[in-house]
Image (cartoon, rainbow, N blue to C red; front, side, top):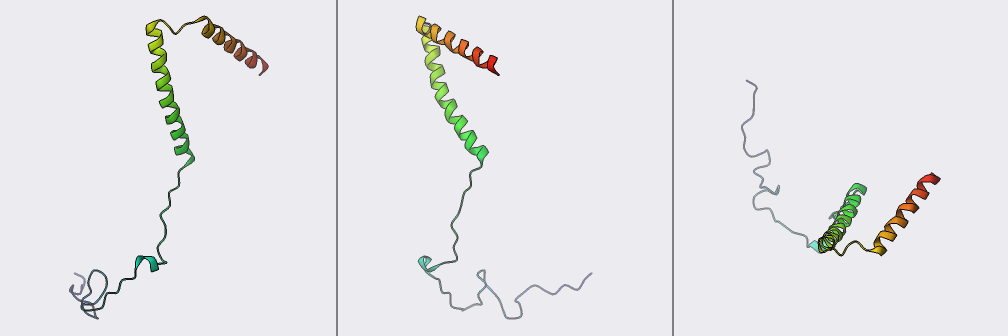
Amino acid sequence: MPNIPPLGPGPSGPVDRLGLAPGAARTARPAENRTDRRADRVEISEEARLLERLQNQTEGRTDRIERIQAEIAAGTYESEERLSAAIERFIAELDNESLI
């Protein structure tokens, strides 16, 4: 078995949790005089920002979907104006795809 010295006070005597010998004066510096403190910093990744934007869009879409579902259930969703607008958007999409 290796020769392990006994545990106990070090060569200069016992030390408390702060590293001070018993009876040593404890002087605390006021917080405003401390220059060694560093401010915490948070960095938000680009992925987190994208996720937040998607989540915000989803919340807005949920409201819209619920409103449209209620209109469909009430029979007030389909109208001539909406049908014409949908057809115009569809034709515009087809025109844009044919340009690609």
